[in-house]
Each structure stands twice: as C-alpha cells, then as structure tokens.
Image: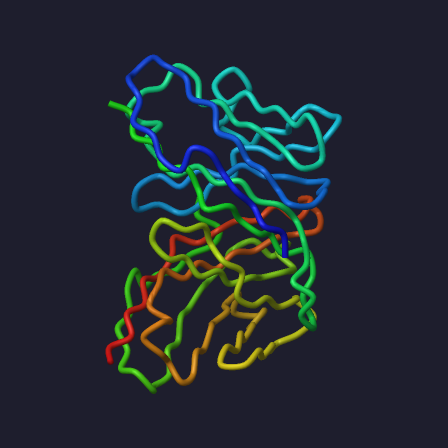
Length: 119
Length: 113
C-alpha cells in the first residue's frame, strides 16, 4: 500500500480566504482522488485528478471553488477558494492501489486528512 | 440520494464477542464493496473487500458477507477486541463509473473490555 502525507494537518481560516492542501505519495500513481467529510457525514468525492489531464469533478463541485493541480505522479494540491463556514470539513486525498490480499483489487488508500475550520 | 446506507450509527459490543456491522445499497451497478476503519484524526484504513461474484470473503478475524438479492453486506469481527473501536465505513464502486467509491455514513463501534 502507498504511504500518503497531507499538509497541513489542520488549519483555521477566515471567511473569504483560500487554503491549498498538499498531498504527497511515496510512489507513482495514476489516479488520485480528493474527498470531503463534513461533520457527522460520510466521505464525499470532490474530484478525480489524473496526471496530465484536467481533474474530473463530481456533481456539486466546481473547478472555480476547488481548483486541483496534478503536476506529477506523486503529488497533487486541492485549493478551497473563497471559504465560508460551510467549507469546514476534513479533506482527504486517496490513491488507487492494491493491498495484495486475495480477492482484492483496486482499493483506495487514504492520507491522514486535513481538518479545516472556517470562521 | 444516499446510495450506500449504514442504518446503525453506533454499536457497542463486549470484548471477545462478535461485532456485526451492516450496510445496504440501492445501486444495482455496484460490483465491488469495501470496508474501511477510521480512527480519530486519521484517514480511513482499508480493511477488507468483496467482489459481486462472491458472497463471502474472510481475512483473519474479519469476514464480509454479500447478499446481492437483498443488496446487503455485513462485516463480522470475531473475536472483537478493544483496538477495534473505531468508525467503520462501507463503500461501493462500479466498473461502469470508473471505480469511484460511494461511502456509507459510518457506524461507530465500541468494544467494551
């Protein structure tokens, strides 16, 4: 499984500002995903980021609000723009991989998350 | 529209007993199902998975059962240990949707010593 790190681990931001979250993987991966987990909610996919192409956004998420970069096969950033208190969430990146266990394939492995609080 | 549902937000089990976590789904296109465990301040950790061509997959203390006709899966943990206390998410994906994961809302398991 891949080792994934995220920066920052947490931040408190003012309304109207932007925050860029970094995701670093210890191996080259084709597909990276960005998720949001709002308080008490499930994980919701924001977008899929493939190196060399534009990110693909899920319904309800737009590039102007959540611009994503994927400059190489081990790194991606997600920016939360013009933040409001409703953006307070845990943001997680994940990569597609395989655990190598029998009957398993294409699991996603997650970073530790970035806890964002918007005041 | 919540396509993956975990109707029990919490579960408490005595150490050594069996923990059974349930998950229901509505999308018949889902063909791969996963369970994740999440501790506070950490990302979800992959636990076990099952393909729709199987009805059971076992890995140590963890067994996942899939009932396709009922669109239901369950995770059995036996024997339960205090270290199993965490939030458990089930997730589903479909090849036709590019393997994107749809998560349930999670069940918080507490294993009492």
